[in-house]
Image (cartoon, rainbow, N blue to C red; front, side, top):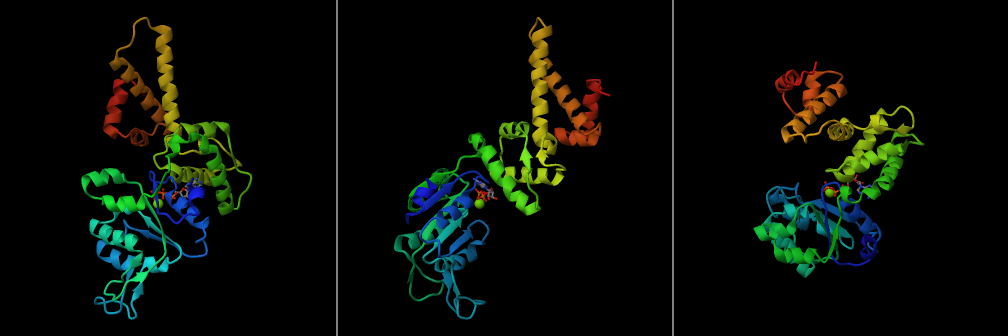
Length: 308
Ligand SMILES: Nc1ncnc2c1ncn2[C@@H]1O[C@H](COP(=O)(O)OP(=O)(O)OP(=O)(O)O)[C@@H](O)[C@H]1O
Ligand SMILES: [Mg+2]
């Protein structure tokens, strides 16, 4: 879809959770368009203070305000002329700026701060946000008319957990990139690691996957990435699952009466503590951190469950 629409001049709205690749898509769309020879200018609407945003976007003329540079300054829109402007984190743009942006989009011309006459510009707009703009419109924090202007072509990038079949391909691509960075080659993943990666729910999406693989390459001695090279939080959850399954199997085999919820929870709690202590080599402070409880609370529970 992104490839198909890259040749058009219509505005694009990229949505998706953090780390799903919105910026990567914006670049790819520009690179694949006839504007490729012209600038791709990114502006992060969330990180520029409101009072500077207008002059950043539209520029200013000499003498527009105290401290204004001699000769004035071109804004991002002028810089992006004939190219693409990428309005990142558009959901964080203040309402007052939203009105000004809308005017530019409608009229195709920008006016510098303190400027005399507007200048016609030809830019393609790509906007991105991880926010829910429809909800923001309902709440009155995002202008509906601006939304319609931006939302001509909407690309929703799904979170990684909803396209787990992509994980082997993306991981291979990322490993290739890491090999170049670390001057290595021939690094591969075991099938166990791939299925472990596919079990995780990736709140940080591809950025998180990149971090996990980079970490693995750092601790790797040979060429094969295995479970031990994954960070604890990825290994741990499977420990926990398999133990839970064991508890369930134990009951099926040895007990006539169904366990109460309380009994099951205690067993799972006990097993989680044992797992954490094993992972931390018996270090109680580290185990309590893994479990997200206080050290005193861990001591109490060890006593309660008779864990030495
Ligand atoms: N399909 C993909 N293949 C390979 N790498 C990818 C892919 N998608 C994203 N990445 C990489 O993942 C990282 C995060 O992507 P990007 O910065 O585009 O995400 P984003 O959606 O803009 O996130 P945020 O909302 O946090 O700004 C980048 O390093 C990017 O190169
Ligand atoms: Mg981004």
